[in-house]
Image 1 (tube, one colour):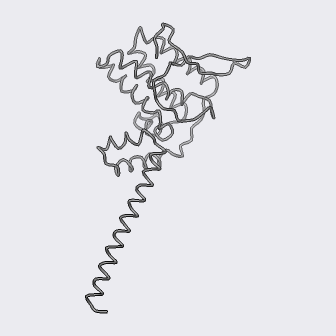
Image 2 (cartoon, rainbow, N blue to C red):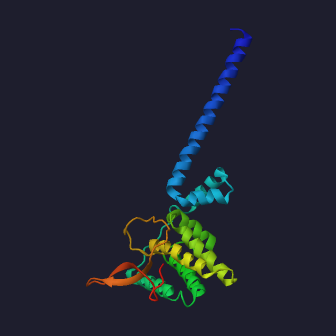
Image 3 (tube, one colour):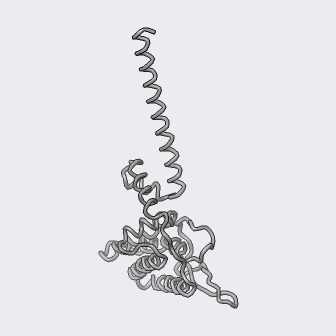
Length: 220
């Protein structure tokens, strides 16, 4: 075989190897994207948006969250503590018409405390949300929304409708954290729905999360 033919064969082999490497890398990235999308749901798109469309940066962010918090051990609430939280949440909602700013502030503080009692980090809000996004990816955005609304309300930058929507969208996150172990799917979409009220049922006083309206008739 001539020198020219050998060079041609080598060049072709290099080009084919490079093409296969690119194809393999793209295939691996595609598989990783599917895994992250399946685990994080809406958090995936939010991370991509926060990184200005840079999917590689978003993947690194989400992979870091998984590495740090995937094996975090959390504890369910006792029945007594669960009922106390349900009553507190319902009580905060009932005060909304009289003081929407206070309702949002109380709900924000309640959710932080609830997450802490479930075993999530409590040293900083950012760390707590990062951990929650791994285990409650489908509804943690409601926590962010009410936390941001509470901060804006302290500066007088919100209106009643914004505060109402913040409470409504935080409710699925509250339900996800407060419900008993093995009680339905752990992931619920954060969509507007009627507000929760606490009640007991049966002779054993079992916990239940009812759906309805505030005492003053305000629809949620």
